Amino acid sequence: MMSAFSWPQNGMPPSVGSAGYKGAFGTKVTAREGSGAHQAEGSRHREGSKDMVGSALNQGVLEGDDAPGQSLYERLSQRMLDISGDRGVLKDVIREGAGDLVVPDASVLVKYSGYLEHMDRPFDSNYFRKTPRLMKLGEDITLWGMELGLLSMRRGELARFLFKPNYAYGTLGCPPLIPPNTTVLFEIELLDFLDSAESDKFCALSAEQQDQYPLQKVLKVAATEREFGNYLFRQNRFCDAKVRYKRALLLLRQRSAPSEEQHLVEAAKLPVLLNLSFTYLKLDLPTIALRYGEQALIIDQKNAKALFRCGQACLLLTEYQKARDFLVRAQKEQPFNHNINNELKKLASDYRDYVDKEKEMCQRMFARCGDGSTAGES
Image (cartoon, rainbow, N blue to C red; front, top):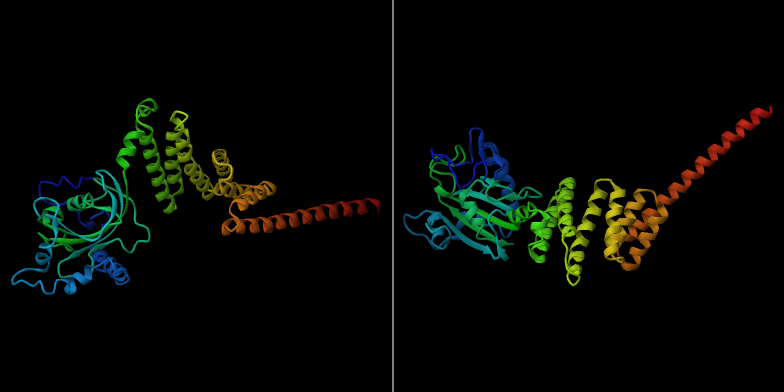
């Protein structure tokens, strides 16, 4: 995919397409979607959200700031921060974020809406999506201004940006939705970001090279891989999540730490093993789920989640006695945990069904044997 920082010589931004255009985050939007579906969904979301203020902006937020001959965006720009150095990208923070700034090449999880001046419905929005997708800076984001804007944000931040044409859709625009030489407004909420570049580079090193780095670096990269896995798991992409979890586990297993630091490695392994156990349950592979659950119990033999996962796996394997043993131990650790108590009820129900079926099968077998004996005597 063309980089957001390298435009063709004809001045056409990389988001332009013949049958429509790709939105600021690489999602293709047709003229019909931009003026209908996206606008309607974005409008419905905005009506139910106090934070999203695009429609309010165009309905008079700037009343009292009227200046003859100035457009709405020109008046708005006067109170915004210049983050590009040439006033091509302007920013207004609506809600402060926390933690570190987004790093270059990070993968970001955002919600956004894009507006044209004098329009209170977005021409592009992902607020209607239940789960936004994770997107990598420099690859999935097609607006230069968006890249710069995101690099100025922190987790949880909600901000409003104005992008001049050379940071947005260029001199030609994106007909029919974006006119030529158009300044656009975007409202962006940064839900989270992951430093994928650091993780990818570290994982590409050999085990010997990785050993040259301090333990904290290994723990950080493993945590990033696990966070990637968690994101993919929430998207129900269990096979992809499994790959990330296994990468994290491999990093931790390869690491040789001195005895005084080994507890840090074990503590980092535990949630990864629990996640792998849960993921394999979702993949309907209880034997592997049980194996990872038992490895977690080696680290913490009283861990309620590990006991619970092992109990779930044994139940799926119809190993009822083992399932009961694990679940009773889990219940001992967390007596009021609804999931554990419900699983014990399910176990009791499944076991009753199993016993009833066994009885019925035995009765049928004995009945057939009885019929054969009678027939032989006569």
